[in-house]
Length: 125
Image (cartoon, rainbow, N blue to C red; front, side, top):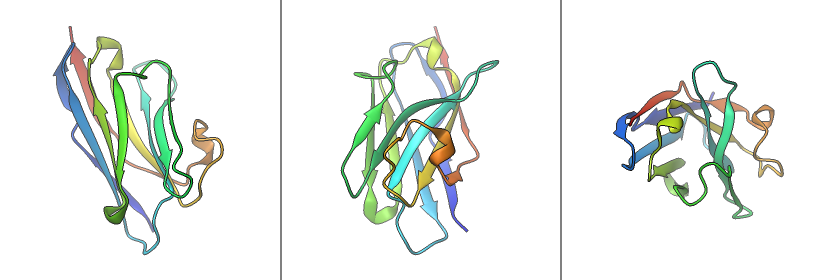
């Protein structure tokens, strides 16, 4: 069984920064695709950003391009989300997701095998 443990959420201010971390544990193999989704109150969960290890691909939603950066420490099976220039509309529960495969379509949450419990990010104006 694989567990994804997120950390780093909390309260931020508009224009400020927060950094999320997610570590995969419980199995010997590495997660090839790791990424982030978010769900705001009353809305569906949406794709934020993801990356693959073996094919070195990265994809981010248009709403966060230029503000959020995804990075990885593959040796530690950990993915980070550096969130800069925060906006109140970034307020959501952020979920880490992972797949042992190098996903061709990283934006579809149905393609991910494992999920974290979610971490709340609240951005005040």
